[in-house]
Length: 115
Image 1 (spheres, rainbow, N blue to C red):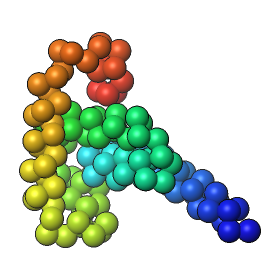
Image 2 (image 1 turned 180 degrees about the vertical axis):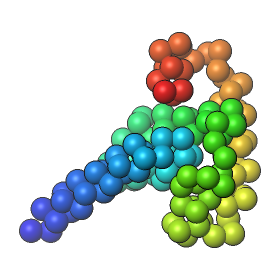
Image 3 (image 1 turned 90 degrees about the horizontal axis):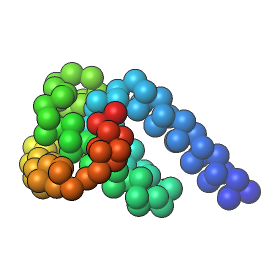
Image 4 (image 1 turned 90 degrees about the vertical axis):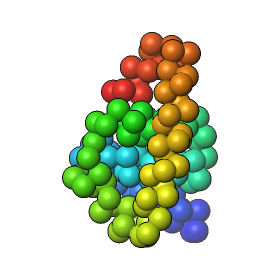
């Protein structure tokens, strides 16, 4: 019974994250939250890394404004609180590092991340 409940909870969470990703495709907060879920619950490290890279690229390219959409509000509601600025600094550093490798990522991978 417990396994069934767990499977149902995962199924529901995946459905909710799909809705969030469809509604806020450029929100780094949503993407990073989904990456954490993908990494820890679904145990899909490769997909989680791709999601984190996508968020870093979006943030570095200035494609989103953290004051709009689900950005800052989503982080605060999720318990991000005062750590939002330190999270931004970390993600900014990651984004800069990832962009330094931009020419080493194949065109197809980069297009998938930019989509």
